[in-house]
Image 1 (cartoon, helix red, strand yellow):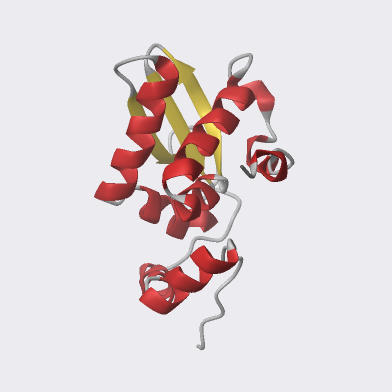
Image 2 (cartoon, one colour):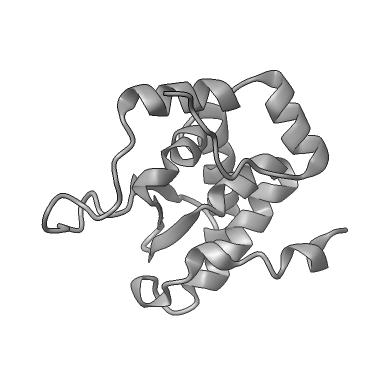
Length: 151
């Protein structure tokens, strides 16, 4: 019912050279299938980017600073939802891989973005992993852009 509203939201797959032809369209269709089942999870997936599609494999990569969205998408229930959507799109078996961009792509010098400490990642995850925040994001159809941590 809200499909026209969702169409302009295609920013995360901005580098089409890494995805096969039509990969951006596949990623958009995957996100829309997930959105039908779990709207907030689809918003989290939009922080990723299609890295590989084909041979019954869909790989979605997340920038290192987007680890909260990756960790949330990897939760058992959420990953099952993404896999179900991928199976619907690919017509049968489908492997879904959720990865950190740059982890296997050999960036010299250890990466360009500053790495979030494990403590900060845990605190950020705890701050966003509350019923009140999840409910608010679901009701407002919103997502958290940034979490400021006191030092």
